[in-house]
Each structure stands twice: as C-alpha cells, then as structure tokens.
Image (cartoon, rainbow, N blue to C red; front, side):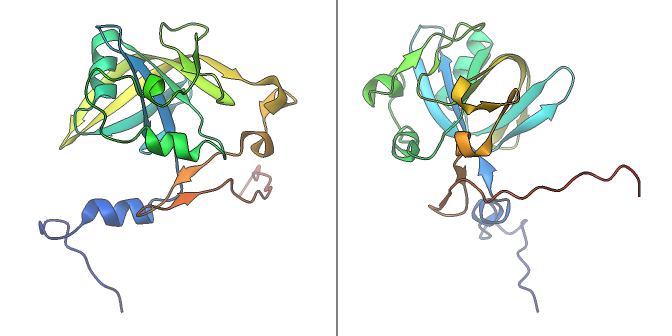
Length: 195
C-alpha cells in the first residue's frame, strides 16, 4: 500500500514532501551585492549544474529574496561551498535578516575579493563558483536563476590531479525537515563504454 498525496489539494504539504524526498541537495551558499553596494549571503538548496558548455549552474529562490533582487540588479553572484564545520554559520545566515543587513558582516563571516566577478566570496570556503546572470524564469512562487560560470576557484589543498577531492571538500547537504547531511560515503563505479 502507498499513501497518495494530491498536490492539487491545498492541505498537502508538497514542499515538505519534496524536500524530504529529493535528497541530498547540495547547498549553494550565495554571495551577492545589491545595487546599493550592500552585500548578502544566503544558503539555497535548490541548486545544481545546468549546462556543460558553456558551463552554467542554476538555483531556485523560493520567493523574491535579497539574493534574487541583487542578482537581477547587478547580474552577478558567487556560489560558495558549505563544508563540514561551517553548518552553524550557513544555517545562521538563513535567518530572516532585514533588507540592507549584510549577513556576512552580522555573523562575522570573512569574505575576500573574487577573481573575475565584482562580488566577494566566502574566504573559508574550499571552492567557489563565480557567475554572471544568464537568465531567470518565474515559476509559481519561485524564480529559477541560471548563471554562466566565469571562474571556479579551489583551495590548492583540496585538489588532487587537478580535481577537488570529496575528502578535502567535505560538502554538507540539506535533507528534509531540519536535517542536514554530512559528507557522503564514496564508492567508485566506472561508466560503461557500451550496453
């Protein structure tokens, strides 16, 4: 037997169900700067790679938050990785700060200049993805934002043979409810070259 949840029924908690099923979700800890020069730092867990060439990433903003307003105003953002040990700061940055308050300043999270885009990155993040806005699309109560990747930075101690290692990155993820996921157990499977 299965329980069926009718998503057309307003009493169905579709968001809670989806965020408990679509797991783990990598966290895009996004830095932006508004047209007024005020910074913003917020975690977004509706995040993924969107295109191979040119390289693009995407995330969804549920509602019209400061992150979205800043990106639409300036055209730039940086995705910073949240590693184990950073969960308290990332979680704290998700609080409903007033517009005009820079979460990084308020929480004493050190930032540093990015390489290409005019938005700072989180200094302690093992890797960052610097993006220029490609497009955005309103979907119901959310906005899908697609960014063209202009530069990727990785701490040198997190690289092996030119690629980041899971052991060094130790990425956190969002699960359902108030659950967070730690760095996953890794297994290796070679992709088949024929059926």
